Length: 317
Length: 317
Image (tube, rainbow over all chains, first blue to last red):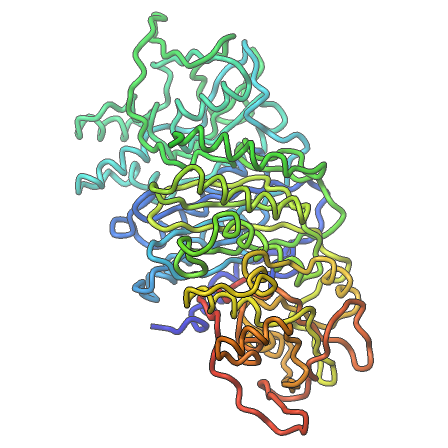
């Protein structure tokens, strides 16, 4: 096994190539320096803990690193921000092999390159449990997207499709593997950066779907002091996901409502406005509190109790 | 015990008061937003892991939080930056009491107020081992301090006194308690923000003493491609620290050379320049590699092997 300084040097080497002209000082000094920017700066931090947010014995190291980075970048997307840089703080059990650690770092580096978010700094520490804490920094759009601007009468939309990540995890927990179109949503999630930028000018509120649609819509409703009516039939579900859910005897709709870590953007628009990005209209906001799920006839359906990915990390940022 | 959302709300309440006008959006949305700034932005992340960097059964919760924040802020000081904000990501074992968690957060909040570095975001997660990951963001000075600008002929200086933190830890490990003047250096370290700002215009290189003088001076030497001659008699040691070291049968000088987490600033100046801050001249830079320790007669002394706080976290930033 490489000694500590060798390992740090190797990590620097692997992540150094993620730099951009925006980076004045990258990895290797007491702190990193990003060039001055005319934009306000958007900051978020997210953590992935082995055994809580992922299982290191059931997910490849590059996927663990990639996912950790995307989870933080997705918070930038939800604000309409453009990624500038990341910092990556790793707690590594002593028993982890060099190969595992470098593969983990390569996964982070891949996300850094794909999203033009250079890894400019980080920290390594020993500890009993593997964890990855990612800070993401972005440039704010002229008008920042928040959870708080939605109004009764607004329409509710979501990008992409929902529930595939939760289904992929569920399959893995049973020792099965979802079809790749489903499993990839778990292994290689996407942060909706371009959609967020396009929505910044027009959406009244937005959030990324990290804790599950119901919970994240609940955040918008609470922050905006409105209620939501969701159309059950409108929920966007990928056909491959639905077919595999049927195969496993799972309720695809419940997964779409409660499953987390899809990293789609959930947003609201003023009445009659069409979104500037591909998205599905799934409901409307009304005065009041709470979320109601309605069938095509307008009859209220029970909300599924499954709240897939309810961790303790529905937190400050 | 408070449920998770209650706990998050309480933490928001306690940390919300650390805000400043620089904060456009603080705790509570997907990400935080800091106002646009003319300055380049300085970013660093630091982690404190229970059992590695501190022991939660031997240090009060407010001190654990305070120290974690100061460790990150000290990296800003080393660049000459002015703190703007922090993000705090906590991994909390399920068994931790509300009182402990809130006291930890109050310690972070105290540092945030003292250093005008509002906690604008964070993250809570469950995990087996308590850890605190702090991201600090600062405004860069016109000329950023780095480790890399020192030249042969420069003089070597350090603010304050060295070794007290290591001695305080050593005493605690033996079930004793250092006199308060020594112990406070462990419980409530100071980040040398003002000194860093003043030095930014003139110092050729700087670093904060987090890993111990020898190791941190080694970083400057490596980054600047120079060697150092240290004057053993010149090392600044607090008399109370020396007296207590004698009492414990410890070598105060070895602690000053190898003990970490003093968070003083170690810096280099061009020949004949006097520092703009209170500091002690402890040596000179010469061509070559490595560090030599010299007595008053210029005779080389053996370097102590004690490297007090050599963690794995002498890392990327």
